[in-house]
Length: 636
Image 1 (cartoon, rainbow, N blue to C red):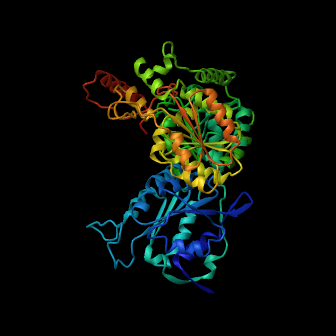
Image 2: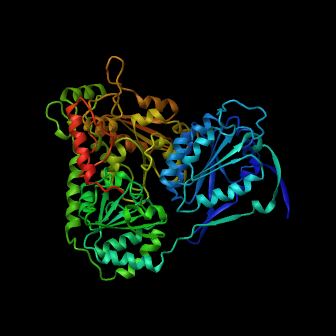
Image 3: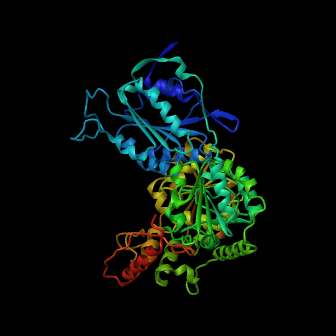
């Protein structure tokens, strides 16, 4: 057996170049590239290896570790988890900045390879710059904080350890049931240490993404449950999208008249125009989907984690009468809500289930279409919500006084509602464009009122709802689909928290379009706060003398090199979108919108922590309402 002498870092890069994925008869490289932010701990190891020979890997210099990691996550998500980027950071703060992104990848089951540098294996110079020290163990470093946020975690203190660690990491990342972040921390002295590796370790290695096939017992049980139900509902989760189950979902839904409702991760698996698609489910769901879920006698969860937003904190279904059937590659997820479990691939299971349902029809008749029509009318109303200083839509006022809304209108120089602006964006961009969102009120709005006309054009991260994903994620999506227009929908609060990868997009000529909805505050949390009895406190962007902050965000983006626009009317917004389509570089549209003009809940409830004791009578009342709802909720 031949040997080849390489440093640990050189061996790592050589190995990454030889990993392939085989899916449904197609084979392609699995690792597309690597995001780098160099510092001591990786620049002289992984940096040297990439400079010497990066192979086919595309190398991008990030601006913030969390930001570039989110770009890698969004890339993998858009590629349906079939391709990944690696991410390398320095030791200490650089590695710590991966924590939020690692949580994002873990919560969403997205494969990504994290390669943070670590302190010295020899410990000779300890404590090195940016090294933390714990009295109970010299072995603890910053990277230990990533253990609970990784699907697989390892520390390399000898060059030969790299081989078994990489094999394990790729086994985890290419397994649909376990997919998530793999973190391999490499001691900085070991990165440059040489070893004579077996040449066979660097030969082409193919990882097979085989579809898990359901056993006959599972199929028979599932068929019996469906055929005995009168009003089933299919919950389309992220697993449906990753399994590419669109066609069979449409076929089953049309044939048997079963409505589809969507989670955030499952949205745009099936287009919004499909007659039986009732849209988003739960706290951020549509009226149609939530009504159907409450009336259902069988919930068919396909590739869903049943988060509290999807289940309305386990009050969104009639648990007294409804049964549950879960189809999921993860045994843990399949067991949720005490369901009948089918632990298998979504597409394969539905295709094999279809013949067993021959002749079955639900009892919905025209109910599905009536629910959808009711929601279409409500969405149309939301598209026309307007604010006037004297005669304004009462939906706009919310918990704000007329005087405060007038103040916002004067300060931001706008009368735009967020719903009208968002629907205008939906109607103005090309149908095959891809949107990216994550936090604040926008995910709720897009799950309800955004109508995707093309599959896989909705990249909304809501498993972790991590602020800062929106612009970073748009870069990752653009790298995944360079021929598509990509739009980052971001609030002003999230923009202020992290927008560094807009610079990376401009630097590398990767055109993204940022649409910033500025309502001068953390509007989503302000709604939560005031909707639960408190006053507005600490969630608006105000100066020391109580003036509303009116920041010129477009000027910031313009300074970076983006083409920038201001919009305070729908006409401004439409014109900006049309002109942005003509640009070859990244664009930035600043849209001033009034607070309290986003969508509200539709027959849903979210269980949040409310003060049990308060001097505020309104808080006391709402706490008692929570107790009443909690008593109605399923407890497991």
